[in-house]
Length: 356
Image (cartoon, rainbow, N blue to C red; front, side, top):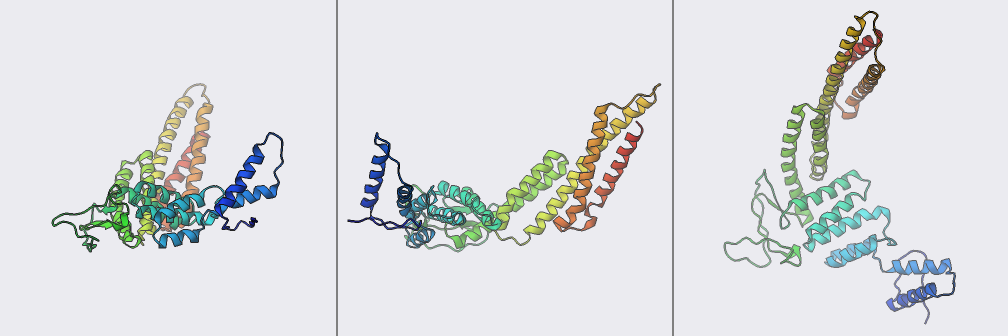
């Protein structure tokens, strides 16, 4: 009996007992007391055989179509493991398919992890946002049904595979339903199934409606506080809302985001300049007091350093404010007030330095 195996890296159909025999032989040779140098060809052969069982993306897709969801989960783990046959560009697809299979099996927590992993395995922003939003949707759902907090649209009822008892509403449970996709389900108004990818689009849209309402309230409240920490919290809230908005396909998100960022940039600049103005007034007051003495005293180096830092910060701010209208696609007059204030503070800093 002969054993043939290509070292091309392609998936090989090598009988299990042959692989076991060769791997055992290699292990035996490598553990013998006398020193034996293993050839590179033999090492490559072992690696090729180890990779032989790892399914390809096409294998996983076919398994999913056939309803072998457990096989998809197992095969995905093998394919994504070190030495697997998955290229870097396919890792997103495999993780996402694994997440879909886990949803079919009713394993919500594992599905969240799979979609989160998928969001990190792609350079396509939209793919990353959709995968991230899907993981958020699953975590916010109960029994694979998302219930909207703000909208109550009419939803078509899904005919259960077995009619439930009169007057009862059946809910899915990973502990009672081995296959979540086969669960009996009656949707109430405002409830959305998340397992079916086609129906999931409606669930994502509903989640964005809820998210948008909360995000707008939070951003409005934080920007009204007019502190640097609250401005940063508002900015963070925008970033958290973005994956959900993009996944829901909300066409106005890009413009809304620009408007929010433009407003936050104004607030941030105003707060920073308010702080700079207070410091300038304090230094100027100290300088007047020093100059009134005989003989006049020089400005401390610490205050000169402060003035230089303020001047540098103002230069950076002016440069940023001039560039923002083009970056955010807003009117150039948006930051005129802030630019005028920054120029005034520059003159003030220069005047204080000149008195020394």
